[in-house]
Length: 124
Image (cartoon, rainbow, N blue to C red; front, side, top):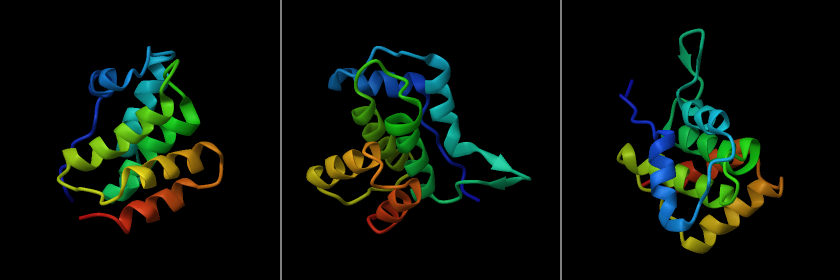
């Protein structure tokens, strides 16, 4: 089992500053987003692959919890990409694809499972 590196709430806040994300609306919600990729049940990892981990953190920031006053979609995209990069993975996609996927998520037209598949197909 890999030793995963998880993005922290403070790291997301710091990375988000250059994209004018914030301020934080709900710190507890942000923390819940950041720990979601590490969740286990019965000793088993609920999100065992990097695509699973990146998808759940992105989905939670952009769609489920909305921890920021402004920039939740941007925050979800950053959280997804940073989770991949921190663990040595590079999802191969255009900026247009990234924007389209995040919009599909928040509009309810893409599930977390579909996002996971999208990412899995694009890992380099």
